[in-house]
Length: 397
Image (tube, rainbow, N blue to C red):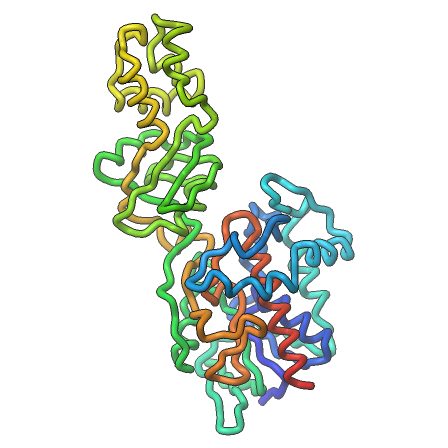
């Protein structure tokens, strides 16, 4: 039986950072990881360069049943704090777009930094741990038992095992099962930042696989202006991944093609070039295959000079509000994160501790806080881990 001040389940972004922060505050930490190595999702993120934060990260960039929950942690550990840590380790980075920060080199640098941040005399990382049982005794101590019989005991337990997105990396719903075991509610999890699939009449657009264009995409009241990508299954690209977190089955996704075009661009085109066709004008502004597909569906084959302004305005309106009816998503296998998770109503926004179960904490993706695409989910991992580590230190003192 290994005794420590805290057991952290999961050595991903949140778990690694919490272990380092807790260890630096003098706590002995048993960091347990199911995989054979730590930080596997960090290593594949950002195309292997790790989009480790976003300069603009704030509460408005997160989806949760309680939109106010993330405010406390995000205010106390901000992007500038993590950037300072990265700078201290001499890791070169750059802003790619929209405040997204990436390593110039490799995501391996971030994992190495995290491990270096864990004091060797305080944090013990054990990989390949298949947890068979977690129990809490009458004294409030938690005991974690592995399938091979090894045991760890501590007065505090941190759930940092993430959600079920990207199961090939070892992801599962373990966090939710453990939360329910201790009587905590779970907001229904679902794939987020995930490609959408098309069927029915929309399936014709799958013929455009590989074609991308800048658009505005909207699901419900939430809109993003980035690129959309047509795939052999449906829709992807940054704009689609973003709105997928807000989309629900049965709802439409609205796409604005030519988001930067003037409001009466077609009518102006008619006056300037009355003998031109809609297909020609679309090809000047969009990839040829996409322009042809849209022109075919709009069915306007006459010269623009022979089309009424009313009909042209109808085409402009259709292009500015093209409705797709996705029949699903590509699921957890392709989802970058999981929306939903351990209900924030069960946790303290200041400490991440469960109100019903003293000594039990949940951080990172395991919690019902889901960030936008572009480094926001990593920032939540750092911020929630920092808040948790602070609370653990206060608890011990």
